[in-house]
Image (cartoon, rainbow, N blue to C red; front, top):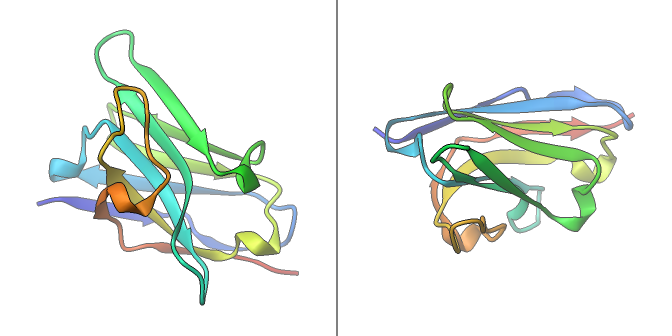
Length: 132
């Protein structure tokens, strides 16, 4: 059974930090490309961060970010634990959204897409609210 389960959402004040985690199981684990997406009310779902992993030693990760989160968010992956994390710093009110973990079709050996078009599996989502 393919499954992605997110955790770590919550409410923070502007400038605060949160760490989201996604546990992958079944066919979802071990996929080369994964990412975090978000959807705010009334807006389309957008890619936030993506990672492409070359699993043969030495394990190598290639990361991609949408411009609005560069320098503030970090995506990371632990293949041994089958987890995908998103560390978020300096959060802004415009980061408020439901965040989704996803597996994606890779665009190439080192290229993970930020477009939802290529997503094959979605998690159930976790809410992040940034407000004073």
